[in-house]
Image 1 (cartoon, helix red, strand yellow):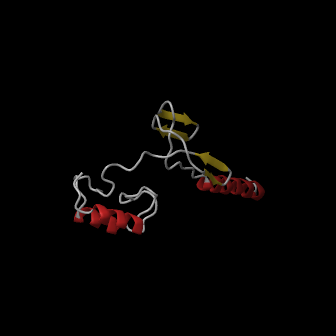
Image 2 (cartoon, rainbow, N blue to C red):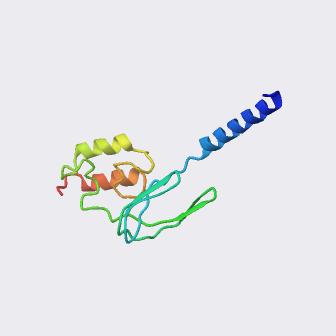
Image 3 (tube, helix red, strand yellow):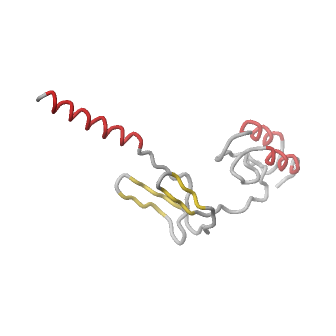
Length: 131
């Protein structure tokens, strides 16, 4: 194999590898109204819940756009993070451990996507309550 062909093949392999390495697509949360399950196509897999209404601002990233919905209202005991039926020191410990955490925190009492002073205020207001 000539040096020119070897160089060309090596360049193609590096370019293909770089393209695959940057193609990291994720959907962190989603709903499928009127049905649910798994949809696949090529290397993509999408799984969803059913019966969720849609309402959201448009979300964009690169050349992708997503218009979505919302999850249900806060439950009866929004500051009972460990699910023991009461808001107490154990829940405060969970909140403090997750304080400042962006989306996905188990201590997001007000459901706004982060754990901050608003969540602490809600926990303190509900402190000592039994659900």
